[in-house]
Image (tube, rainbow, N blue to C red; front, side):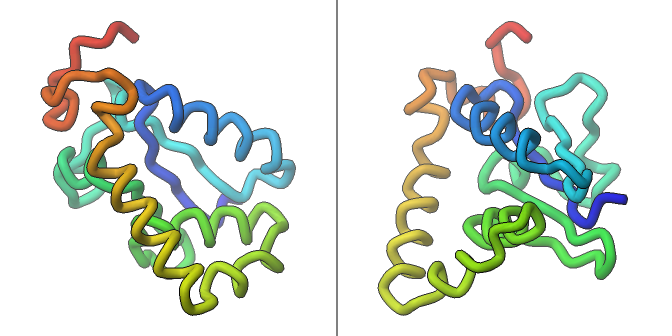
Length: 129
């Protein structure tokens, strides 16, 4: 039974690479990976708009219903995959700020870095599936 739902952009090559790694590590099925680029995905079903899902990585704790975003998503997922020992290191002063700044920069520039048009942020991506 999954503990977390992770929402990822299946049209982002970097995101897909990371999710492939996570899926290989998820031997106990603790994470339900949801592709927001899939034609069947409806953001409203989760009480959020598509731009929110595209703006920063999102996850939901299925036990508490708590929504997570940004670096905290990676902390929780890798913790669920057996790497909980790394989590305290990511909260050390300086390391935490660097991770947050790095992820925020990536999130703002993800479409440009993956050579995708800005229309993708609004769900009107011309990239073929």
